[in-house]
Length: 85
Image 1: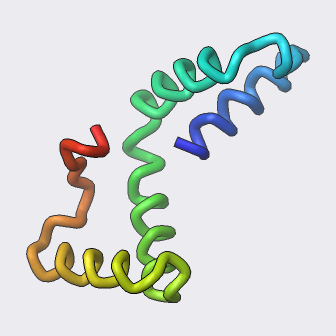
Image 2 (image 1 turned 90 degrees about the vertical axis):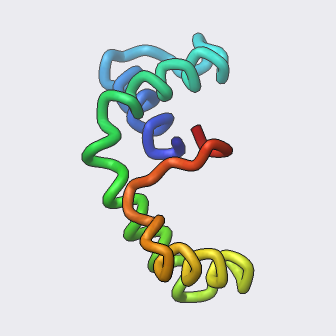
C-alpha cells in the first residue's frame, strides 16, 4: 500500500499538482485503484522484501515463526488472507 500511495503522489507531482490540495482519504482511494491495476508487478517484489525483512529479524520472532509456518504449509505465494483483503 505504501508503494501505491507513493506512486499516486509521484503521479500528482509529475502533473504539477500539490499534494496539499488532496486529502489523505483521496490519495488512499486512488492508491487502492492503482494497487489493483499493478498488483501483478508489485506482489512478487513485496513478498521478497517481506521475506528478507523477516529472515533478517527486523520484524521480530512472531513474524519469523508465521513465515516459517506459511512456507511449510505452502500458503505464502501470492495468497491474500481475509484480514488483508
